[in-house]
Length: 80
Length: 80
Image 1 (cartoon, one colour):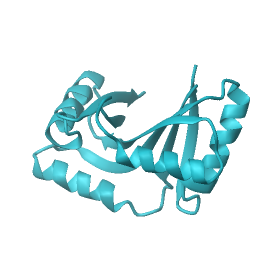
Image 2 (cartoon, chains in turn brown, green):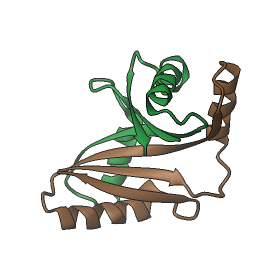
Image 3 (cartoon, one colour):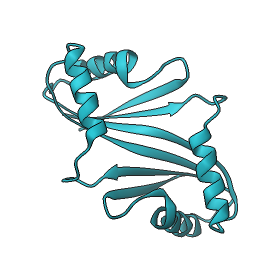
């Protein structure tokens, strides 16, 4: 089963990577870019086939490793 | 208008970051993780309100800056 995890900095947390992208887009002549936030996508290929168990397992992975929950939020989506 | 860009390494391109995550998950006792790929999410907040123009503009941003199209593929989704 394929599972996709999005990890983004929580709103209010400074995102220097996103700011760098915003400045670079401005330098390239792109106008009207009001904000940029950058995050991570992690695509997991799991042997688990039960959606509930997969979600529970991936939630634990996020809490333990994939996201820094102090400053990052995550969302999990199962590819069916 | 909010636009979301996913940038992933093309399949076949070695993903050391994903491999590192896979090993780390194994070390933490998570079993049945057959593969991990890691990519970027970029959330753009655009002044543009026309969906077609927004998509065209973001496609150009991807080609010029956001993705390295030699090794990465991107997908654009507009938040409506």
